Image (cartoon, rainbow, N blue to C red; front, side, top):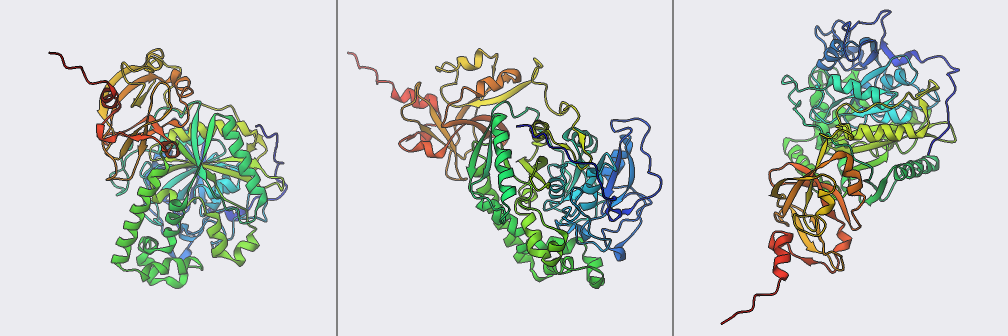
Length: 575
């Protein structure tokens, strides 16, 4: 559904409080490179050599001698840095109002909050002052401001982009994020910025998924949604879901209780001790220099013992196991980036409760090691932007970008607050070209598609080739489904200790034909992500749990072939 809505060019002056350090001349990057000619801003908790880093706390300010790793990479790629932007102090907040340098307004309507903590970075991108900007994201700070300002916010998988030279907020889950007006530009920046950095204790080499999600995909949405009385936001989300369905998506209602509890833990458990540890030396010596409510939030981290923290980490791991079950049969999660908008005045009058509302669908993402992408979805009747966030497993960054770009360009929206139309979409360079003969997707089959079985021709007629015979990890159960023709099994992921390894075949299928294959899969079966015995993951057949009523549990046989063999009549004895 194309929304032919354009935003007028700004009639109000640009907000100077978006910047903390804005020199007359930018710091130039290399003369050539993938980002040559682009300008960017840096959130002022990220080091730029020779420029002060304040984290929006003047008493904390220092001037680094070296660039943060991510800044160095972007300069080497040819981009020029123009200045450092305002933020919620110590990156603690989602509103953009918790800074002694002033509240950063919304780029579309200055009476409303910009979102935080990366408020200035989002604002200068949305108003066209730079081509892209760096933020950070611990609890949603790289997504909330994007959703509220009609721009793209890319939150990479944890550890994909080095955080060395970034003032930590909660170091184990901090991410450097990217703001841009298009997905394509954000992807270009990510490609230049990513890379393992041994000097960052949480950096890690990650293998990113290279196959697009395809023409048909299944996305999970919360079965119960809270918009805090904002009917315009609810209707906007309904419209976004309808657009995703028109693009080939199938919505699956999920119980988000494990994710919601996880989100509450970030500030409501001993995990908040990470906030205190991040700036402990400064904070304990200069607590009075920190503004409220940031001061109280950081100070609360001192109240917990080491045993409390271990207990919280254990509970988080338990919730992670519960959340894992939600991914059975879906490719991604889709949530509102924020459930509502708040005016600056209202936020300042009730800064804790309203800030928490903005993070209703963001806080759990980094705690559970997911990737996320916030993209604009619509302009509401009241003129305020609405965005959605696509959430995928760790390493799904390119896949989310591909789907997010398709969605964003289908909206017909303009870029940020500039009124400029979206340019033509660009291929995501990290993904295989679906039209290339060499591009394949590996799919695990468990039943009627096995070699010699009735539906194996659906694989071979598409040029698929058998790559291996192996087993799933030991947390699946296999069922013989009733009343299916030809007979088919249902594979169900279960909790650790409740399943067993199941025999599968791995087939490599040309990516160009994968969509037509998936289109043949009938309900209650679906294509999702399977974990194999060696810990790797592939696409494969899964079954909806509700379809197993009346099905026969055949897990003990170890696979479909053994089950079919068990049905054969016993040979007649001869004398």
